[in-house]
Image 1 (tube, rainbow, N blue to C red):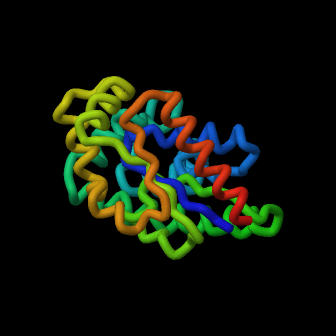
Image 2: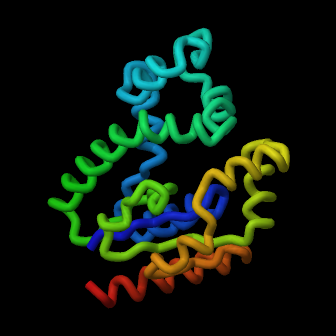
Image 3: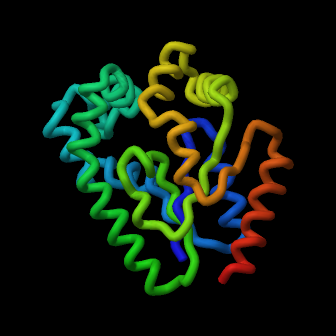
Length: 197
């Protein structure tokens, strides 16, 4: 059984992943995969360099991630181009990791922030969605990434609204409460999952 885990930016999905890992389930992390491929010499590094040029690099040759984020989130056209350029490579790499792990484990998770936006739904037996209110999401994102309300709003707006994701979720994990509430909900879901398999 492969379970897709998703949630909007600053929804608390990373905390959910840690709880899942503590329960001894493996999690393929799409963000980490992207990060790894964006290091100097990686597939995405080269694709981004070919697209945006050397202006996105730090003096040491690594990607200037804050600048890259500002560029990509500056307009819908830039987000679209980024998705086109990086999307195919990311999908190929995620599929390879999924297929490899499926040979070893009966149950595992794939943490894909843009699961719905990039049409990964068909990959999964279940989809767990971490949900927060727009106000909580904006506050968390501003604090975590040191963004203005406008910058946070632009990043949130670049993702599919929560209401459009809800019908596709097998499980919705409400994360408007505190960490203890979240742990209780996720541990309960994991217990239910263990009873299924």
